[in-house]
Length: 415
Ligand code: GLU
Image 1: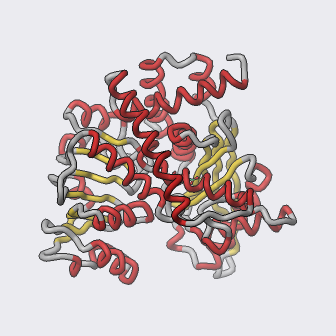
Image 2: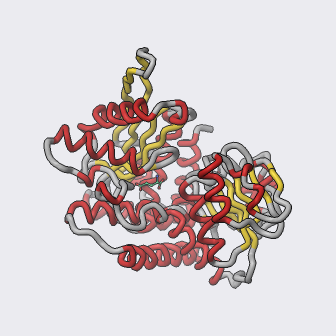
């Protein structure tokens, strides 16, 4: 099954439960536009390479396309199609007036020099320039793309337009028109949702244990917030390996160690008797909370039976496959789904866009004060749906999103 077929299966389940309008169902099964572009780069050794880039624009009935760009060797069209459709759902779940898009380049950015990376980014930006803009499609960071990379895209686009158009991308550095709180927004939003879930289910207890797969932007800040709130982070991992400490890791030590040495496995000084473990072992730890913040398809039909966590929080996009979803549901392990759990990122991206368009910037406190009620009310709607339809949180989140998408179609077209 391709990743996009997974997305269609999720849509099908929720549509059946809620009785989605068949016209809407048909319209959202297709992308409005799919771009494949060649990205030529003269490498430092004088040779030319042409990278393949994509931008998928899934649906814009609720507003301009919105979603990240990833630079990764495993990018493929099916993945970008799925990720863009999830963005449509994610924006609808939190009720921000945006649609869904996603882009990617098939490349291992760690193998490029700084100059090659900048050239490739600017060439990609040129290639998609006719199809992006603050009222059309607004990219953002995703796996292995950063605020600096977003700054290059804003700069290239602005040069082509002959004026400053900072709102063409979000997730920029503060000095280039970024928003306060955007870097921590995905994990901050995940914290709000997790806290609401724990409060509502009466499961809050001091020193709850957590394992976190993935130590990029979302995973590392999530680890930090959980640590600061008194959760016991017993394991973290990155793409190379994991680190486990039964007494709990000192997360700031892991963060600075990873920045200095390049991998979490090199941070054995972050706790007593730390052990190096594999990513696969991390998934099977007996913890209260398993946070998935790496890539898609991490929990699948062959390892879902071995998950021992009491709840799974998806900070990554698509880390649990549909087959694994069924297994976890049968085993009574709730999954707080990606399109809700990681929606804090795109929500603060929306705030960034609004600030860019108004050319008026908010304080960190204002950003936090606006983010929390959005995440909490999205959670409450999903929790209510889960009870009303007697379904999983994922199905409940899709129902929330699809209802808003259906309302937008009805309000704009005779469907
Ligand atoms: N890449 C992030 C996501 O998957 C953020 C997208 C955005 O801010 O537009 O939600």
